[in-house]
Length: 339
Ligand code: GLA
Image (cartoon, rainbow, N blue to C red; front, side):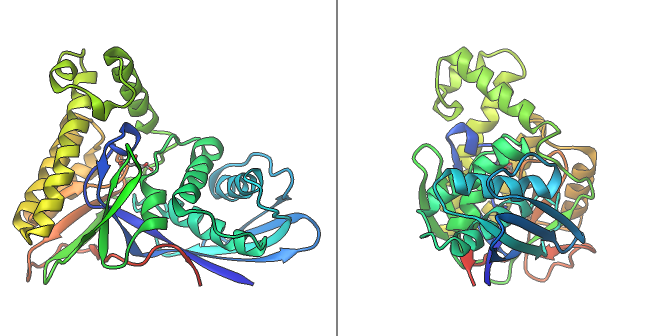
């Protein structure tokens, strides 16, 4: 039997930039999904979602469509086989400690853990991690119906213990950035509003970004000339302004971290949130309440994290601050691996 772990992720900054050829600064967290898998001789995949007590069963050669967690499992099997992995029957079970819908990407953790465990069952060599991230992202896009980018999968598969990674989505270049917080804390607080990428505003924002690119005659919104972008009709101008300003904040955050200036890091989180709320309109009332709770408690900065429209809020807390009830520390952990 093979076991693999796939971490969730926190994106420190650089939200809704991945599918716009921009910059982001995520880290893999020390929580995620553990999957186990062993071969079965009958060509069937039998899967169990332990936390839900639910099962699925399908032919490896013909997974067919399904909803919810089953779409992730069927998609991972289908995409591995389509990439030439000789995967036949397998028994799979998985469980984790990242709540689904919390915005910490339990889905990328699941895809990463499943694909590593199933590659091992098939006796196939592990592909390049960026290629594997693309395969996992096809699971989201083509099987789950969420047009997500590569942020979560790259963070889960290419993260570095104790570090954040700066990803340039124009080149898929990954640069480690030390995350030395000293006695400061990064915490998340769940807004209680569950977000679902396949629904909600996520796909709508992607369509708006495509429309802005078409109007500007460019491939990726991050290439936009700021003046030309400002002349777009509303809301496209604001969507573009968010992407351009967020890219700049990613590099400002890298600078702040390298300089050990965590007050500046907090201000950048606040600025990112304001941009996501006002220009990108990816916040919801429950998230605003959660940001306010954290700021009222004295957080140096707080912002929605992940796709938005619900999910968690990330906050940076100065040493000694008494945190509001319900916060969870998020620590950078190692990337996905076979255990
Ligand atoms: C979700 C998606 C990512 C990314 C973020 C927003 O987490 O899965 O690809 O687009 O939203 O930054």
